[in-house]
Length: 533
Image 1 (tube, one colour):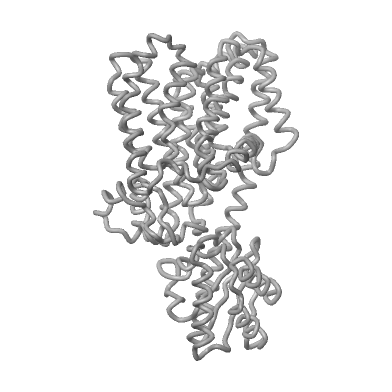
Image 2 (cartoon, helix red, strand yellow):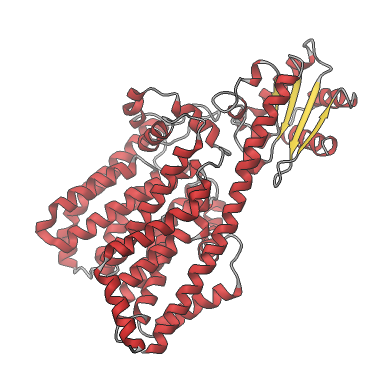
Protein backbone atom coordinates (compact mmCIF):
# COMPACT_ATOMS: atom_id res chain seq x y z
CA UNK A 1 0.00 0.00 0.00
CA UNK A 2 1.47 3.35 -1.03
CA UNK A 3 1.85 6.28 1.32
CA UNK A 4 -0.76 8.29 -0.58
CA UNK A 5 -3.22 5.41 -0.35
CA UNK A 6 -2.72 5.11 3.40
CA UNK A 7 -3.19 8.86 3.74
CA UNK A 8 -6.42 8.80 1.72
CA UNK A 9 -7.83 5.92 3.75
CA UNK A 10 -6.97 7.48 7.10
CA UNK A 11 -8.48 10.79 6.00
CA UNK A 12 -11.64 9.06 4.79
CA UNK A 13 -11.95 7.10 8.02
CA UNK A 14 -11.90 10.26 10.12
CA UNK A 15 -14.22 12.06 7.73
CA UNK A 16 -16.83 9.34 7.84
CA UNK A 17 -16.65 8.89 11.60
CA UNK A 18 -17.27 12.28 13.20
CA UNK A 19 -17.96 10.52 16.48
CA UNK A 20 -14.32 9.43 16.48
CA UNK A 21 -13.19 13.03 16.17
CA UNK A 22 -15.58 14.03 18.96
CA UNK A 23 -14.29 11.24 21.19
CA UNK A 24 -10.66 12.23 20.60
CA UNK A 25 -11.39 15.86 21.39
CA UNK A 26 -13.45 15.07 24.50
CA UNK A 27 -10.73 12.80 25.88
CA UNK A 28 -8.07 15.43 25.19
CA UNK A 29 -10.15 17.94 27.16
CA UNK A 30 -10.88 15.65 30.09
CA UNK A 31 -7.80 13.47 30.67
CA UNK A 32 -5.22 16.21 31.40
CA UNK A 33 -7.49 17.73 34.04
CA UNK A 34 -8.56 14.53 35.81
CA UNK A 35 -5.79 14.90 38.43
CA UNK A 36 -7.39 18.20 39.47
CA UNK A 37 -10.66 16.55 40.52
CA UNK A 38 -9.74 16.44 44.20
CA UNK A 39 -7.63 19.61 44.24
CA UNK A 40 -8.59 21.76 47.19
CA UNK A 41 -10.18 25.20 47.11
CA UNK A 42 -8.00 28.26 46.48
CA UNK A 43 -8.44 32.03 46.44
CA UNK A 44 -12.01 33.19 45.72
CA UNK A 45 -13.32 29.62 45.87
CA UNK A 46 -13.85 29.79 49.62
CA UNK A 47 -16.14 32.81 49.55
CA UNK A 48 -17.99 31.89 46.36
CA UNK A 49 -18.74 28.31 47.42
CA UNK A 50 -19.66 29.24 50.99
CA UNK A 51 -22.08 31.95 49.90
CA UNK A 52 -23.83 30.16 47.05
CA UNK A 53 -24.04 26.75 48.71
CA UNK A 54 -26.02 28.32 51.54
CA UNK A 55 -28.64 29.93 49.31
CA UNK A 56 -31.99 28.11 49.18
CA UNK A 57 -33.14 26.52 45.93
CA UNK A 58 -35.87 29.14 45.43
CA UNK A 59 -33.27 31.92 45.39
CA UNK A 60 -32.45 31.49 41.68
CA UNK A 61 -34.94 34.10 40.28
CA UNK A 62 -33.51 36.81 42.56
CA UNK A 63 -30.13 36.57 40.87
CA UNK A 64 -31.69 38.07 37.72
CA UNK A 65 -32.01 41.44 39.44
CA UNK A 66 -29.31 41.49 42.10
CA UNK A 67 -25.57 40.87 42.39
CA UNK A 68 -24.80 37.19 42.78
CA UNK A 69 -22.04 37.91 45.36
CA UNK A 70 -24.05 40.06 47.78
CA UNK A 71 -21.57 42.08 49.87
CA UNK A 72 -19.06 39.39 50.83
CA UNK A 73 -16.08 41.19 49.26
CA UNK A 74 -16.78 44.44 51.10
CA UNK A 75 -18.55 45.92 48.08
CA UNK A 76 -21.36 44.93 45.73
CA UNK A 77 -19.95 43.56 42.44
CA UNK A 78 -21.77 44.70 39.29
CA UNK A 79 -22.35 41.10 38.24
CA UNK A 80 -25.73 39.58 37.34
CA UNK A 81 -24.93 35.87 37.06
CA UNK A 82 -27.87 33.63 37.93
CA UNK A 83 -26.70 30.65 35.89
CA UNK A 84 -23.19 30.39 37.38
CA UNK A 85 -24.77 30.87 40.80
CA UNK A 86 -27.14 27.98 40.11
CA UNK A 87 -24.22 25.83 38.98
CA UNK A 88 -22.48 26.31 42.34
CA UNK A 89 -25.65 25.32 44.14
CA UNK A 90 -25.73 22.10 42.13
CA UNK A 91 -22.06 21.23 42.53
CA UNK A 92 -22.34 21.79 46.28
CA UNK A 93 -24.98 19.07 46.60
CA UNK A 94 -22.27 16.50 47.29
CA UNK A 95 -21.06 18.69 50.15
CA UNK A 96 -19.85 22.29 49.83
CA UNK A 97 -16.35 21.44 51.04
CA UNK A 98 -16.01 18.45 48.70
CA UNK A 99 -14.19 19.78 45.63
CA UNK A 100 -14.80 16.87 43.25
CA UNK A 101 -18.20 17.90 41.85
CA UNK A 102 -17.05 21.51 41.53
CA UNK A 103 -14.05 20.44 39.46
CA UNK A 104 -16.03 17.86 37.50
CA UNK A 105 -18.39 20.49 36.13
CA UNK A 106 -15.44 22.70 35.15
CA UNK A 107 -13.88 19.84 33.21
CA UNK A 108 -17.15 18.96 31.50
CA UNK A 109 -17.64 22.58 30.47
CA UNK A 110 -14.16 22.58 28.96
CA UNK A 111 -14.97 19.39 27.04
CA UNK A 112 -18.25 20.91 25.87
CA UNK A 113 -16.42 23.97 24.61
CA UNK A 114 -13.97 21.73 22.78
CA UNK A 115 -16.81 19.99 20.95
CA UNK A 116 -18.30 23.38 20.06
CA UNK A 117 -14.94 24.49 18.63
CA UNK A 118 -14.90 21.26 16.60
CA UNK A 119 -18.38 22.01 15.23
CA UNK A 120 -17.62 25.69 14.58
CA UNK A 121 -14.43 24.79 12.71
CA UNK A 122 -16.51 22.49 10.52
CA UNK A 123 -19.50 24.80 10.01
CA UNK A 124 -18.21 28.36 10.16
CA UNK A 125 -14.65 27.81 8.88
CA UNK A 126 -15.71 24.89 6.59
CA UNK A 127 -12.69 22.80 7.55
CA UNK A 128 -12.32 19.08 6.99
CA UNK A 129 -12.61 16.75 9.94
CA UNK A 130 -8.84 16.37 10.46
CA UNK A 131 -8.31 20.12 10.55
CA UNK A 132 -11.39 20.72 12.72
CA UNK A 133 -10.14 18.06 15.13
CA UNK A 134 -6.76 19.78 15.21
CA UNK A 135 -8.46 23.11 16.02
CA UNK A 136 -10.34 21.60 18.94
CA UNK A 137 -7.22 19.84 20.22
CA UNK A 138 -5.22 23.04 20.13
CA UNK A 139 -7.98 24.86 21.99
CA UNK A 140 -8.33 22.35 24.83
CA UNK A 141 -4.59 21.91 25.32
CA UNK A 142 -3.67 25.60 25.44
CA UNK A 143 -1.87 26.07 28.77
CA UNK A 144 -3.44 29.51 29.15
CA UNK A 145 -6.73 27.73 29.96
CA UNK A 146 -5.45 26.08 33.14
CA UNK A 147 -6.86 28.81 35.37
CA UNK A 148 -10.29 28.57 33.70
CA UNK A 149 -10.52 24.80 34.23
CA UNK A 150 -8.40 23.83 37.25
CA UNK A 151 -9.60 26.73 39.39
CA UNK A 152 -13.17 26.23 40.60
CA UNK A 153 -13.96 29.94 40.27
CA UNK A 154 -12.51 29.86 36.74
CA UNK A 155 -15.92 28.58 35.70
CA UNK A 156 -17.03 32.20 35.36
CA UNK A 157 -15.22 32.30 32.01
CA UNK A 158 -15.57 28.78 30.62
CA UNK A 159 -19.32 28.72 31.32
CA UNK A 160 -20.25 31.93 29.44
CA UNK A 161 -17.94 30.79 26.62
CA UNK A 162 -19.98 27.59 26.33
CA UNK A 163 -23.29 29.40 25.80
CA UNK A 164 -21.67 32.07 23.61
CA UNK A 165 -20.12 29.46 21.29
CA UNK A 166 -23.33 27.42 21.27
CA UNK A 167 -25.35 30.51 20.31
CA UNK A 168 -22.87 31.37 17.56
CA UNK A 169 -22.95 27.81 16.21
CA UNK A 170 -26.76 27.78 16.20
CA UNK A 171 -26.76 31.06 14.25
CA UNK A 172 -24.28 29.64 11.72
CA UNK A 173 -26.48 26.56 11.29
CA UNK A 174 -29.49 28.82 10.74
CA UNK A 175 -27.64 30.83 8.10
CA UNK A 176 -26.67 27.62 6.31
CA UNK A 177 -30.16 26.11 6.52
CA UNK A 178 -32.02 29.22 5.35
CA UNK A 179 -35.75 29.54 5.90
CA UNK A 180 -35.98 25.87 6.91
CA UNK A 181 -33.75 26.40 9.93
CA UNK A 182 -35.76 28.70 12.17
CA UNK A 183 -35.37 26.31 15.06
CA UNK A 184 -31.65 27.01 14.96
CA UNK A 185 -32.40 30.72 15.10
CA UNK A 186 -34.64 30.25 18.12
CA UNK A 187 -31.94 28.17 19.79
CA UNK A 188 -29.39 30.93 19.13
CA UNK A 189 -31.62 33.48 20.85
CA UNK A 190 -32.25 31.25 23.85
CA UNK A 191 -28.57 30.41 24.24
CA UNK A 192 -27.59 34.06 23.94
CA UNK A 193 -30.03 34.93 26.74
CA UNK A 194 -28.32 32.40 29.00
CA UNK A 195 -24.90 33.68 27.94
CA UNK A 196 -25.82 37.26 28.89
CA UNK A 197 -26.90 36.19 32.35
CA UNK A 198 -23.77 34.13 32.78
CA UNK A 199 -21.23 36.93 32.31
CA UNK A 200 -21.33 40.45 30.94
CA UNK A 201 -18.51 39.97 28.40
CA UNK A 202 -21.01 38.20 26.14
CA UNK A 203 -22.55 41.52 25.08
CA UNK A 204 -20.23 41.36 22.05
CA UNK A 205 -22.43 38.75 20.33
CA UNK A 206 -24.05 41.17 17.85
CA UNK A 207 -20.61 42.21 16.60
CA UNK A 208 -19.58 38.56 16.26
CA UNK A 209 -22.67 37.68 14.19
CA UNK A 210 -22.54 40.77 11.98
CA UNK A 211 -18.82 40.31 11.29
CA UNK A 212 -19.45 36.67 10.37
CA UNK A 213 -22.11 37.63 7.85
CA UNK A 214 -20.06 40.43 6.30
CA UNK A 215 -16.66 38.76 6.22
CA UNK A 216 -17.22 35.01 5.97
CA UNK A 217 -20.63 34.79 4.29
CA UNK A 218 -19.77 37.70 1.94
CA UNK A 219 -23.21 39.20 2.48
CA UNK A 220 -24.13 41.94 0.02
CA UNK A 221 -25.28 45.35 1.19
CA UNK A 222 -28.91 44.62 0.25
CA UNK A 223 -28.82 41.28 1.98
CA UNK A 224 -27.16 42.92 5.01
CA UNK A 225 -30.16 45.21 5.37
CA UNK A 226 -32.45 42.19 5.30
CA UNK A 227 -30.33 40.48 7.93
CA UNK A 228 -30.53 43.55 10.14
CA UNK A 229 -33.98 42.31 11.15
CA UNK A 230 -32.44 39.05 12.30
CA UNK A 231 -30.06 40.98 14.53
CA UNK A 232 -32.89 42.95 16.11
CA UNK A 233 -33.73 40.39 18.86
CA UNK A 234 -30.04 40.07 19.76
CA UNK A 235 -29.74 43.87 19.90
CA UNK A 236 -32.92 44.15 21.98
CA UNK A 237 -31.70 41.58 24.50
CA UNK A 238 -28.31 43.29 24.72
CA UNK A 239 -29.86 46.72 25.24
CA UNK A 240 -32.29 45.35 27.82
CA UNK A 241 -29.49 43.63 29.69
CA UNK A 242 -27.35 46.79 29.70
CA UNK A 243 -30.34 48.85 30.89
CA UNK A 244 -30.81 46.39 33.75
CA UNK A 245 -27.16 46.79 34.69
CA UNK A 246 -27.52 50.56 34.67
CA UNK A 247 -30.66 50.41 36.79
CA UNK A 248 -28.97 48.15 39.35
CA UNK A 249 -25.42 49.45 39.42
CA UNK A 250 -25.45 52.90 37.81
CA UNK A 251 -23.17 51.80 34.97
CA UNK A 252 -23.76 50.02 31.69
CA UNK A 253 -20.50 48.13 31.19
CA UNK A 254 -18.02 49.42 33.76
CA UNK A 255 -17.43 52.50 31.60
CA UNK A 256 -16.42 54.29 34.78
CA UNK A 257 -13.15 52.33 34.75
CA UNK A 258 -12.21 53.68 31.32
CA UNK A 259 -9.51 56.29 31.41
CA UNK A 260 -6.71 57.55 29.22
CA UNK A 261 -4.22 55.39 31.11
CA UNK A 262 -6.46 52.31 30.85
CA UNK A 263 -6.88 52.74 27.11
CA UNK A 264 -3.13 53.38 26.68
CA UNK A 265 -2.35 50.15 28.53
CA UNK A 266 -4.96 48.14 26.64
CA UNK A 267 -2.77 47.52 23.57
CA UNK A 268 0.07 46.20 25.71
CA UNK A 269 -2.33 44.02 27.67
CA UNK A 270 -3.78 42.53 24.48
CA UNK A 271 -0.26 41.80 23.22
CA UNK A 272 0.69 40.03 26.46
CA UNK A 273 -2.50 37.98 26.34
CA UNK A 274 -1.77 36.94 22.76
CA UNK A 275 1.74 35.83 23.70
CA UNK A 276 0.36 33.76 26.56
CA UNK A 277 -2.21 32.13 24.29
CA UNK A 278 0.30 31.27 21.57
CA UNK A 279 3.28 30.23 23.67
CA UNK A 280 1.93 29.69 27.16
CA UNK A 281 2.86 31.48 30.37
CA UNK A 282 6.24 29.74 30.21
CA UNK A 283 6.83 31.25 26.74
CA UNK A 284 7.07 27.87 25.06
CA UNK A 285 10.32 26.97 23.41
CA UNK A 286 12.14 27.69 20.15
CA UNK A 287 10.94 24.34 18.80
CA UNK A 288 7.29 25.24 19.45
CA UNK A 289 7.72 28.63 17.83
CA UNK A 290 9.45 27.04 14.84
CA UNK A 291 6.57 24.57 14.41
CA UNK A 292 4.01 27.38 14.57
CA UNK A 293 5.96 29.47 12.06
CA UNK A 294 6.37 26.45 9.77
CA UNK A 295 2.61 25.82 9.86
CA UNK A 296 1.75 29.46 9.24
CA UNK A 297 4.45 30.02 6.65
CA UNK A 298 3.84 26.88 4.61
CA UNK A 299 0.08 27.30 4.79
CA UNK A 300 0.14 30.95 3.79
CA UNK A 301 0.91 30.06 0.18
CA UNK A 302 -2.12 27.80 -0.19
CA UNK A 303 -4.86 29.46 1.87
CA UNK A 304 -5.92 32.23 -0.51
CA UNK A 305 -9.40 30.73 -0.71
CA UNK A 306 -9.63 30.99 3.09
CA UNK A 307 -8.58 34.59 3.49
CA UNK A 308 -12.01 35.63 4.74
CA UNK A 309 -12.04 32.88 7.34
CA UNK A 310 -8.49 33.80 8.37
CA UNK A 311 -9.45 37.45 8.74
CA UNK A 312 -12.54 36.60 10.76
CA UNK A 313 -11.07 34.03 13.15
CA UNK A 314 -7.77 35.91 13.30
CA UNK A 315 -7.80 39.63 14.08
CA UNK A 316 -11.59 40.12 14.11
CA UNK A 317 -12.44 37.30 16.52
CA UNK A 318 -9.45 38.16 18.69
CA UNK A 319 -10.31 41.85 18.99
CA UNK A 320 -13.97 41.17 19.71
CA UNK A 321 -12.99 38.54 22.26
CA UNK A 322 -10.52 40.71 24.16
CA UNK A 323 -12.46 43.99 23.95
CA UNK A 324 -14.11 43.43 27.38
CA UNK A 325 -10.64 43.29 28.94
CA UNK A 326 -10.49 47.08 28.61
CA UNK A 327 -13.05 47.43 31.41
CA UNK A 328 -12.28 44.26 33.38
CA UNK A 329 -10.28 46.18 35.97
CA UNK A 330 -7.54 43.55 36.22
CA UNK A 331 -5.67 41.06 34.02
CA UNK A 332 -6.21 37.30 34.12
CA UNK A 333 -5.57 34.41 31.70
CA UNK A 334 -9.28 33.56 32.06
CA UNK A 335 -10.19 36.69 30.13
CA UNK A 336 -8.93 35.23 26.84
CA UNK A 337 -10.66 31.85 27.11
CA UNK A 338 -13.17 32.80 24.41
CA UNK A 339 -10.72 34.79 22.28
CA UNK A 340 -8.36 31.79 22.13
CA UNK A 341 -10.87 29.94 19.92
CA UNK A 342 -9.74 32.16 17.07
CA UNK A 343 -6.08 31.18 17.43
CA UNK A 344 -6.97 27.48 17.35
CA UNK A 345 -9.03 27.86 14.18
CA UNK A 346 -6.40 30.03 12.45
CA UNK A 347 -3.83 27.27 12.95
CA UNK A 348 -6.35 24.71 11.72
CA UNK A 349 -7.05 26.69 8.55
CA UNK A 350 -3.34 26.52 7.71
CA UNK A 351 -3.32 22.81 8.52
CA UNK A 352 -6.37 22.20 6.32
CA UNK A 353 -4.70 23.76 3.29
CA UNK A 354 -1.51 21.77 3.79
CA UNK A 355 -3.36 18.53 4.55
CA UNK A 356 -5.78 18.70 1.59
CA UNK A 357 -6.22 15.56 -0.46
CA UNK A 358 -4.62 17.17 -3.52
CA UNK A 359 -1.71 18.66 -1.58
CA UNK A 360 1.84 17.64 -2.32
CA UNK A 361 3.26 14.94 -0.02
CA UNK A 362 5.88 17.38 1.25
CA UNK A 363 3.18 19.82 2.37
CA UNK A 364 1.26 17.06 4.10
CA UNK A 365 4.41 16.03 5.96
CA UNK A 366 4.92 19.63 7.08
CA UNK A 367 1.31 19.75 8.27
CA UNK A 368 1.51 16.51 10.24
CA UNK A 369 4.95 17.25 11.68
CA UNK A 370 4.19 20.83 12.71
CA UNK A 371 0.81 19.83 14.13
CA UNK A 372 2.40 17.02 16.12
CA UNK A 373 5.04 19.31 17.59
CA UNK A 374 2.47 21.96 18.48
CA UNK A 375 0.22 19.43 20.23
CA UNK A 376 3.12 17.80 22.10
CA UNK A 377 4.49 21.10 23.35
CA UNK A 378 1.10 22.36 24.41
CA UNK A 379 0.63 19.13 26.38
CA UNK A 380 4.02 19.61 28.07
CA UNK A 381 3.33 23.25 28.90
CA UNK A 382 -0.14 22.38 30.14
CA UNK A 383 1.31 19.79 32.51
CA UNK A 384 3.77 22.35 33.88
CA UNK A 385 0.93 24.76 34.49
CA UNK A 386 -1.15 22.02 36.10
CA UNK A 387 1.66 21.22 38.54
CA UNK A 388 1.52 24.82 39.71
CA UNK A 389 -2.20 24.54 40.39
CA UNK A 390 -1.77 21.22 42.22
CA UNK A 391 0.85 22.86 44.44
CA UNK A 392 -1.40 25.85 45.14
CA UNK A 393 -4.29 23.57 46.09
CA UNK A 394 -2.14 21.33 48.31
CA UNK A 395 -0.69 24.33 50.15
CA UNK A 396 -4.17 25.80 50.56
CA UNK A 397 -5.52 22.63 52.15
CA UNK A 398 -2.52 22.33 54.47
CA UNK A 399 -2.94 25.97 55.50
CA UNK A 400 -6.59 25.35 56.40
CA UNK A 401 -5.69 22.31 58.51
CA UNK A 402 -2.69 23.94 60.21
CA UNK A 403 -4.53 27.18 60.96
CA UNK A 404 -7.44 25.32 62.53
CA UNK A 405 -5.15 23.13 64.63
CA UNK A 406 -3.14 26.13 65.85
CA UNK A 407 -6.27 28.10 66.73
CA UNK A 408 -7.80 25.23 68.68
CA UNK A 409 -4.57 24.71 70.62
CA UNK A 410 -4.11 28.42 71.41
CA UNK A 411 -5.58 30.02 74.54
CA UNK A 412 -8.94 31.59 73.84
CA UNK A 413 -8.60 35.28 72.92
CA UNK A 414 -5.13 34.85 71.44
CA UNK A 415 -4.08 36.71 68.31
CA UNK A 416 -3.30 34.49 65.31
CA UNK A 417 -1.46 36.07 62.39
CA UNK A 418 -1.95 34.02 59.22
CA UNK A 419 0.57 34.35 56.40
CA UNK A 420 -0.64 31.84 53.82
CA UNK A 421 0.79 32.25 50.29
CA UNK A 422 -1.16 34.85 48.34
CA UNK A 423 -1.39 32.62 45.27
CA UNK A 424 -3.25 30.03 47.37
CA UNK A 425 -5.27 32.25 49.71
CA UNK A 426 -5.90 35.58 47.99
CA UNK A 427 -9.33 36.88 49.21
CA UNK A 428 -9.80 33.67 51.24
CA UNK A 429 -10.03 34.88 54.86
CA UNK A 430 -12.25 34.58 56.87
CA UNK A 431 -14.07 31.99 54.73
CA UNK A 432 -11.14 29.54 54.75
CA UNK A 433 -11.02 29.31 58.55
CA UNK A 434 -14.67 28.57 59.22
CA UNK A 435 -17.23 25.96 58.13
CA UNK A 436 -17.74 24.35 55.72
CA UNK A 437 -13.96 24.32 55.13
CA UNK A 438 -12.81 24.14 58.75
CA UNK A 439 -14.50 21.96 61.40
CA UNK A 440 -15.23 25.03 63.54
CA UNK A 441 -15.12 28.79 63.13
CA UNK A 442 -11.69 29.69 64.50
CA UNK A 443 -12.64 33.38 64.61
CA UNK A 444 -15.04 32.57 67.45
CA UNK A 445 -12.12 31.37 69.57
CA UNK A 446 -9.15 33.52 68.53
CA UNK A 447 -8.64 36.87 66.86
CA UNK A 448 -7.30 36.52 63.31
CA UNK A 449 -5.40 39.08 61.27
CA UNK A 450 -3.74 38.66 57.89
CA UNK A 451 -1.84 40.68 55.31
CA UNK A 452 -4.16 42.70 53.09
CA UNK A 453 -4.02 40.39 50.05
CA UNK A 454 -5.51 37.46 51.99
CA UNK A 455 -8.63 39.17 53.24
CA UNK A 456 -11.99 39.00 51.55
CA UNK A 457 -12.73 42.68 52.09
CA UNK A 458 -9.84 44.85 50.97
CA UNK A 459 -11.72 48.18 51.32
CA UNK A 460 -12.34 47.46 55.01
CA UNK A 461 -9.03 45.72 55.74
CA UNK A 462 -7.38 48.64 57.55
CA UNK A 463 -10.33 49.29 59.87
CA UNK A 464 -10.97 45.60 60.47
CA UNK A 465 -7.31 44.89 61.24
CA UNK A 466 -6.93 47.84 63.62
CA UNK A 467 -10.17 46.85 65.35
CA UNK A 468 -8.93 43.26 65.73
CA UNK A 469 -5.61 44.45 67.20
CA UNK A 470 -7.43 46.73 69.65
CA UNK A 471 -9.73 43.94 70.82
CA UNK A 472 -6.76 41.66 71.33
CA UNK A 473 -4.65 44.24 73.17
CA UNK A 474 -7.57 45.07 75.48
CA UNK A 475 -8.42 41.45 76.12
CA UNK A 476 -7.26 38.98 78.76
CA UNK A 477 -4.70 37.34 76.41
CA UNK A 478 -2.88 40.43 75.18
CA UNK A 479 0.37 38.56 75.72
CA UNK A 480 -0.53 35.58 73.47
CA UNK A 481 0.40 35.75 69.78
CA UNK A 482 0.89 33.00 67.21
CA UNK A 483 2.28 33.77 63.75
CA UNK A 484 2.01 31.19 60.96
CA UNK A 485 3.55 31.28 57.49
CA UNK A 486 3.60 28.58 54.81
CA UNK A 487 6.07 27.99 51.99
CA UNK A 488 4.20 28.63 48.74
CA UNK A 489 5.74 25.63 46.97
CA UNK A 490 6.00 22.92 49.63
CA UNK A 491 3.47 24.04 52.23
CA UNK A 492 6.11 23.78 54.96
CA UNK A 493 4.84 25.56 58.08
CA UNK A 494 6.94 28.22 59.81
CA UNK A 495 5.66 29.11 63.26
CA UNK A 496 6.48 31.69 65.89
CA UNK A 497 4.70 32.36 69.17
CA UNK A 498 4.99 34.76 72.07
CA UNK A 499 5.77 31.77 74.31
CA UNK A 500 9.09 31.35 72.51
CA UNK A 501 9.55 34.99 71.43
CA UNK A 502 8.15 37.43 74.00
CA UNK A 503 9.09 40.33 71.70
CA UNK A 504 6.47 39.15 69.21
CA UNK A 505 3.62 40.59 71.30
CA UNK A 506 5.50 43.89 71.55
CA UNK A 507 6.00 44.05 67.77
CA UNK A 508 2.35 43.30 67.09
CA UNK A 509 1.19 45.87 69.62
CA UNK A 510 3.32 48.50 67.89
CA UNK A 511 1.18 48.04 64.77
CA UNK A 512 -1.61 49.94 66.54
CA UNK A 513 0.33 53.17 65.96
CA UNK A 514 0.22 52.74 62.17
CA UNK A 515 -2.67 54.42 60.38
CA UNK A 516 -1.72 53.94 56.73
CA UNK A 517 -2.85 50.71 55.02
CA UNK A 518 0.30 50.24 52.91
CA UNK A 519 2.58 50.74 55.89
CA UNK A 520 0.54 48.46 58.14
CA UNK A 521 0.47 45.74 55.47
CA UNK A 522 4.22 45.99 54.85
CA UNK A 523 5.01 45.73 58.58
CA UNK A 524 2.69 42.79 59.06
CA UNK A 525 4.32 40.94 56.17
CA UNK A 526 7.78 41.83 57.48
CA UNK A 527 6.97 40.34 60.89
CA UNK A 528 5.80 37.13 59.26
CA UNK A 529 8.86 36.88 57.04
CA UNK A 530 11.43 37.61 59.76
CA UNK A 531 10.00 35.72 62.70
CA UNK A 532 8.56 32.64 61.01
CA UNK A 533 11.55 30.92 59.46
